[in-house]
Image (cartoon, rainbow, N blue to C red; front, side, top):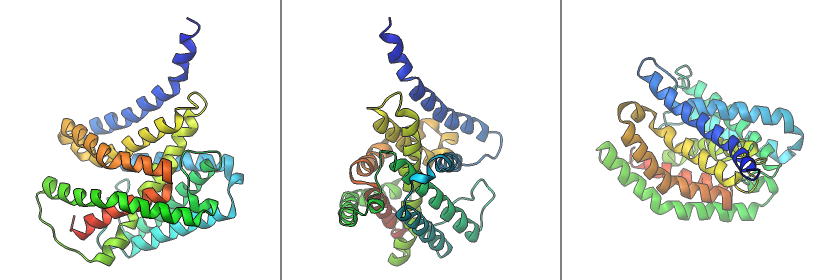
Length: 284
């Protein structure tokens, strides 16, 4: 009896986190039948950014000069890239920020904050490394190349899947524009979900589940990111959304999980970027 109680207590935080994540999806879907409500991505973006701010308030002293330089650089790349984007059109954030200029500022600032939050967590032994922040330039280059090689066949699969699901043929677009605009989802989503959110979940689990915390946090962040793509489908066809999300998690989510955990953030960004280059290039 004394052995069972501590075991149950160890998983309390994990169960509560899982229940909280599920409740966001369920409550949002129920409310979407009655009122206009922000997208699931918007809700988790806000949670991840708020968590990053909380971490920074407590652990900003752990940051190094290179961390501020990298976060500022990524924020500027995203913000300026969004301002000049032609193929990437994000949904209005919280149904309020719609203009290209507003999106550019929002995405740039969110990337800056999430990068700093992820780096502050990394400096505490977090689960995902940003190798450039550790001056591992050569290793980061190899990781980027590895992410591109792993992502290449899946980028072709992505285009084929989009053809089948959307019922449209390929409509070739400008390659340079595709490469530029693919930085938006490639950087922003990986920094927010694979770096900041994963790290935040890890912080919450590391005390109760020290050995499993990195993997469990990463899987939860991966599922949040994957299923956030299907908020509209959850309303019209929830069972199809569950099935498509599961397939997407296996085909694209798990590679990103392993790339981020074993190679680093740069590798995950490269993989994600290539998927969207192929998508934009093919006209989807």
